[in-house]
Image 1: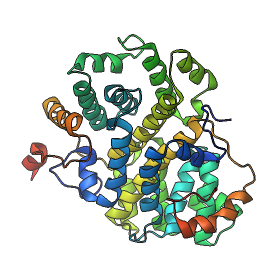
Image 2: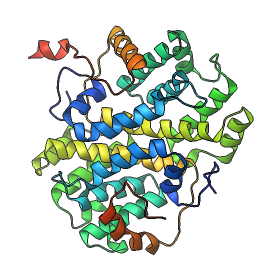
Image 3: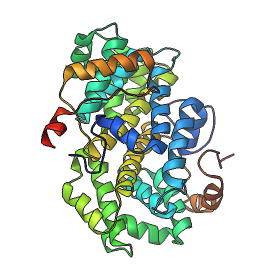
Image 4: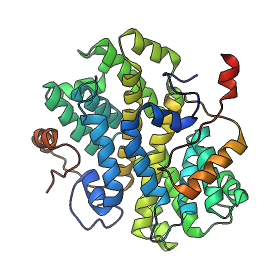
Length: 182
Length: 192
């Protein structure tokens, strides 16, 4: 049960957003721009994967399953494949650029100052642009917020992982600015 | 030097906002909603103190200094109080409720799951409402983002206390949505 009375039974961050609509609006706008805007050279699937990986590192069950299902939806992967990437992205079938970006995200999760010049060079060498590096850092940082927001209240979330997979196509279609948990 | 090609004329997160206006809009709207807009019970100064304290725990120089300066101006120019809170919230002359909220903020900084039912119970005993608890957790979580964003791209973070004070005064008065003033980055100018 959540630490505060949310007056709704929506799961994870959705319960918090319904409780506090004034902060939900910019939070959803941020997720929409970062993860779903088509004006981006990183695919939606790639961006969702960064969010999933950081949520995994932060051990946030709700976020890693929501965004893992989104990444799986866009990239055509099942839960097991997404789990494989989360557990060891370096040996996964990903581009060297994505591996370099996930490595930057991994450092951001620990702390902003953990990102090294060498990691940035490695990402550039593999074709990452400045905007892609920027967005990777911001997605990773944003999930350090979303994950803490969700877990800081002990919110409830469905334990059946298929629940998230089933909802991913609708979320992909509608985006983050409407709730699919109605 | 920043990891990506950012403007020399704006420090910290402002250089990132200029670089990427698409994400600046929701990031600024969020900080405005959390810290500046009217709140049923927490003053802007109290909310800025939470942001400043979390930024210090994350060792983000820019965020700690700018929000410390904003807090000072929101608290009737009381810079000493800001320094006392940063040094040790437990001994600072703030309410027991604020101490409990700062304790929760520190837990959030180290990880969301570290917030325990007893932390919440303690804050409630000191008079914290659900909305205050919600906002303290969200502010702390959000600064775990802003701090990582500012440090993760190695933005320019000046050492000039007077500059932060001037920028802080502007934000305390105007909120977050007005344009920033340009700053001469003498360190960068001298290098070039």
